[in-house]
Length: 105
Image 1 (spheres, rainbow, N blue to C red):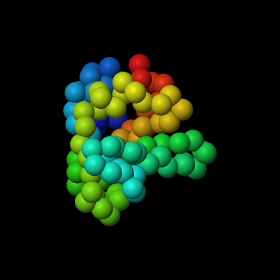
Image 2: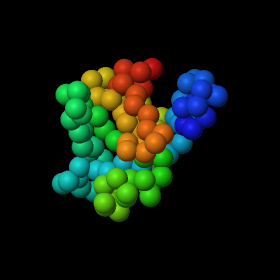
Image 3: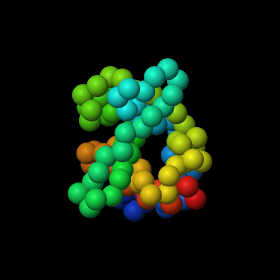
Image 4: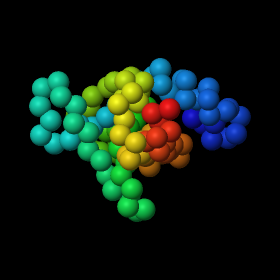
């Protein structure tokens, strides 16, 4: 992500790398068992976002919680809602926002 942000990597290879990598998510309060219920956050622009993290430590720093699930990003992308954006490593200097429609492609 650092290389892409610096303009030294095209978005295509970055997406291939991201899609084959695990991401860490915080399940919504009340999620039970093996059900993964994700909490969407409303952004300043009124849009809905779901944060995911490339490392468990980033999720813990962001949320203050050590409760996390890990899944390959490819598995999320297949059923991602088009109206919800994905934010990778929110609050980090290399944060990446992907609109839901773009992620599904």
